[in-house]
Length: 297
Image 1 (cartoon, rainbow, N blue to C red):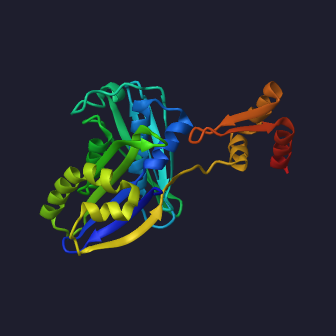
Image 2 (cartoon, rainbow, N blue to C red):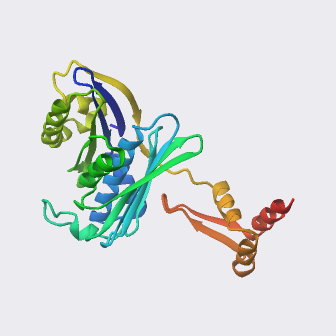
Image 3 (cartoon, rainbow, N blue to C red):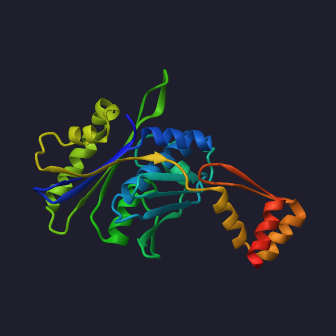
């Protein structure tokens, strides 16, 4: 079953619940960046978070999530939009070692100091950026802190990555999903807290049993017997990129005429590799001359 996002509302308690099933895109991101185990796992978490957070946006907008740290990962950058497109990369894809399960599992990867920063597209050319320092040194916990401090919105995040058979072999990213819970302004805070505990406990087994059936089936399995669950939106998720030859040319022009001329004289062409999808672009010298000529007209 393809990855998808499902957003719903528990009407009896006024709690929003968003579920992202991200198994295939997590594996695609790992393959694209040739990531080792720890780097791939953190990138998968970041992409899942981007999908969940983008679902909270309005209109045709996107969010950017950045993590910087002094550990061997060094950081990650992901973004997602309201159409279901997510993309991202880690600064060091070669981190393989994970800590033992528990509170300090991610410390060998993230280190001892860092921050999370989120840039929101508000539409109409307006943006809002806010950040928090890493305290728990695990993405889920520190994102919950981000929501509490920067957005002042009570939020619970649950993520799970389960090994499962893929193409005849057991894959550590065989089943991947995340769930986000937020109470509406008049929502039942007690019910919100209890739902978080219930979903956190139920997610591993529900994902194992229903992860291949799609996001809607998984969400219903997590909330059995909840007649007040109303599905508000549902759409596919995909790991893809918005880069193109034309965007690369625009970026080169933004360097300025002098720098672009020097690049042409020294290299005879321009070569650019997209960090998000690793696509390699080559702009021949003749095209650069045409760009420079057009820029002066």
